[in-house]
Image (cartoon, rainbow, N blue to C red; front, side):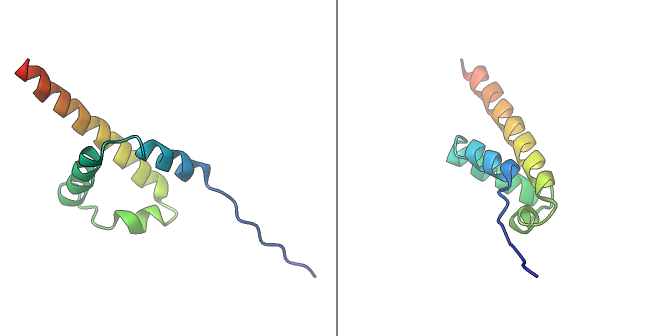
Length: 79
């Protein structure tokens, strides 16, 4: 009997991490703060490393878009 173990790369996580590299550090920090404080997701890292990682990806992307849109509106008021 032979057992072969291979590492299967998770494309969802790889694409998400590539996308995150393009997000401004301050914006990402605000996203994490809001998700932890307002959404009660203090264990984001644990969730991301579990089978529920898709939930984290969706929440982070949605919150990033929400905060970015809010910032744009605030900047438009200054113009």
